[in-house]
Length: 113
Length: 114
View 1: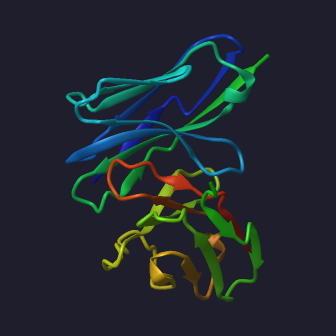
View 2: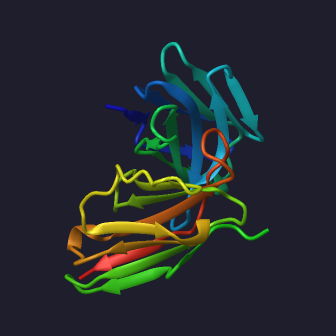
């Protein structure tokens, strides 16, 4: 069964600090991995998309890494801001499932002043 | 340009009633997806449309759920004989083509079944 697991479930950090969110997956055959940010009451917004051949991808203060061998990804947030408070969702797509996405449960991040 | 829009934004219905949720994808996007997000849960895939191909309905939780996409654009998700466990936020997303192309999400419809 395709699964995506994220850790931690929740995280509180102080403004200006860095943090790293983890994602492990068992989706196969792998197509791509995405990180989304979802503010409360809003739809998810894409941060990064990575295919098998990509190891790292950045989007401003967000940097995602992918290790396709160990089936792990991380999202690193640098110099956190209050507006980073949101849920971060790891999503993996398989090539043989109509590109259906398997979603992780998300990490709820709270940035405090 | 305009993003994915959904209506209504909120819907409260009585148990046993039917509801219809609407999604307007981004113009030109051939792929359309419906997801459900229950309180405290992750996103759950429901159904996927790609062009004129038969939809992938593998995520629909029961035969009370159905969806159609008319003219390759607007989609309607219908839930018949609603149950309290159907209460959730229903999200629609579209992409230019399936695969690596970005999926753009609508704001969702919050359904509450009383």
